Image (cartoon, rainbow, N blue to C red; front, side, top):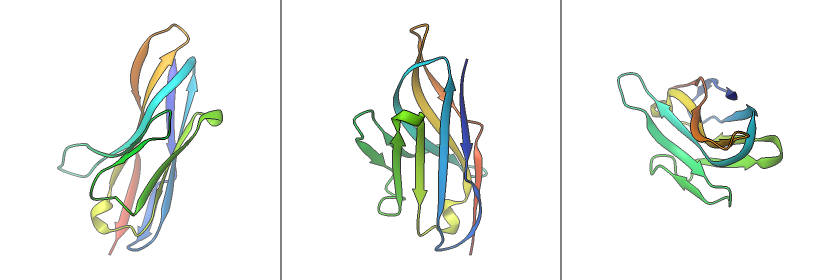
Length: 120
C-alpha cells in the first residue's frame, strides 16, 4: 500500500503565503515525477506544478513567478510554496506522484486534498 498525505492548507488573505507538503509512505521502491493539481468549485482539476526526479520543474502560467515546487527525496516529500496568493487560487489542492512499489508496479497516486482559501 502507498499513501500520500497532504498538509499545510488553510485560510489566508490575498497577498499572503502558504506552504503545502505531501509525504508519501508505504511499500515504495522509487518515486518518479511528483506534482500538485487543484480543483476549484465547478471547475475541472488542473495542473499547478510538477517536478521530475532530476528537479526539472513545470508550472501553469497562472502561478509562474508566485509558486515554487520542490522535493526532498530522503523524506519522500514534495512541497509547494505559494506566495502572493490571489482569491482565484482558492481550490482544493491535490498531490500526485508516480510511484514504483516494491512489487515493481508503477502507478499514479493521489492525496486526499487540502483546502486553500484566499480571501480578498
